Image (cartoon, rainbow, N blue to C red; front, side):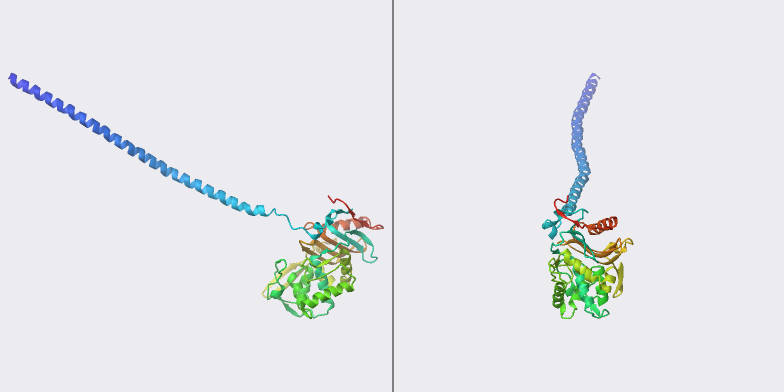
Length: 358
């Protein structure tokens, strides 16, 4: 029996040793599994972070793209600050000459139409480009030629402006009567209409330009030269004194008086009806009594205006050349009108003087 007791004790300790050994082996394996899982979790976290970070990088990329677009959009703004082309009058320093009325035109002349008294003069002998004031001579020749005003004239490619690239609503193929073309040329300064009038003159465009210069000489306009009938060329040049002579003669033509002072006019071109308006806003002003007018503009000439008008009981001829500013020629006319109205019995003309004009 003692022997069986010893055997049982021995088996107990064998079992205990087996359990201890098994536990020692299992625990490291369990720890090993935990360690192997930990990097996996870390890797998953990193992967998740990477996924969350990915959109952030996309946003940053999009932000850079927006900034590039913004820089591109600013480019045209910088181009807008390029200085405008100077007029001939500016290059000649004519704006340095001051006058008592602080006119914005570098050339001005106001005379009494009946007495030829000079009320105001400023650089009146300067010879400058006259832009669409040219059309006043164009209209005078067409009117005096007694050509049929109901004759249809069609705009051709020859009438398209290649000098300045100006636009026109009279497309190639448009047909109007000669009278309608003359109306648009004088009232709205329509370049293609004016060119078509010269092109369809007996003998053609060259003959018409010759007659423009012949007429100028007959009128004593010795400072004047024409090379085409629209005024788009800066080689069409004259002085304020010559233009005052032309205004006086043109005012004697009833047709030119009517068409140049017309506030607006509609023409039918094919299936469309086109509305044209006067380029001189003063014709719609009831405080003005304008008998004849013409405006003009190209960069070389600046803003120009000639008018026959009646102020304070006096018939006046006004000439403004090389005015700086879109509405400054009209402002100069208003300044002269207010001055004449405030001094109806003028005895001494206003003279411009050399010096700073501010």
